[in-house]
Amino acid sequence: MELDFFQISFLAVLQGFTEFLPISSSGHLILPKELWGWQDQGLVFDVSVHVGSLAAVVYYFRVQIVKLTTAWCKSVSKREQSDDATLAWLIILATIPAGLAGFVLNDYVEQYGRSLVLIASTSIVFALLLYLSDSSTKNQRSLNKLTWKSALFIGVAQMFALLPGTSRSGVTMTAGMFVNLSRHAASQFSFLLAIPIIAASGLLKVTEFYQLGATATDWIVLFYGALLSGIVSYFCIHYFLQLIERLGFVPFVIYRVMLGVVLFGFYFL
Image (tube, rainbow, N blue to C red; front, side, top):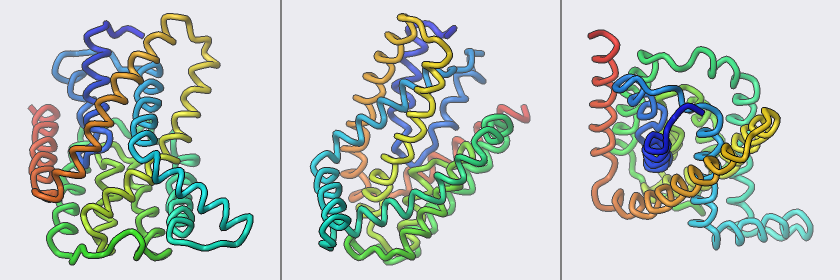
């Protein structure tokens, strides 16, 4: 990995800050390369931030995850149904579309999806959809009112997160509010939905990392990046859930449009 300590630290913080916000981490991670000519982050960095992000969201929702897992196991072994068991099944259902799409299209997206124009376009288009969903729907339903059709709709929407600049959290929150989930419920479902996706992606990257014959230095970088990204991600989740109750999504919409304009500026100027 050709990045120095400062660059690794900067990118880990940037990734941790943007991973769970509806502003697209990929759109931000391309900026250092365009602005300062930094090298591509590489597999070590990708692995570290995936591990860190996963640890942050699992720790933040640890109590709810235990409840969901316990209820799901009871629904399988004892046929006991509850709101927690239903939510666990809905998370599984909503994970399937993006999981299948990622398995089929991952290599293609990795090869052709890092276009600056594509990232700028998706940043703006999905920002406008986020604004539309936040402003034109009732946004009243809690998670225990989520139906399988609505969960599947959110899951299908998550497939668009394969396109850099879309923002996985942004597109799932947008879809959640389109099916009239409250802002908090849509965000919470988005974060819970991130766990299996990030876990699968992280496991794949860790496997690749191991197969490449990682050195002791690589593993130290992995641990450091994961720790730093995880800490930032944790606080980002915590304060984001408080912020949207007061301000809504408009500040993020404005920011995303501005980001898209800036990226277009880099491309055409």
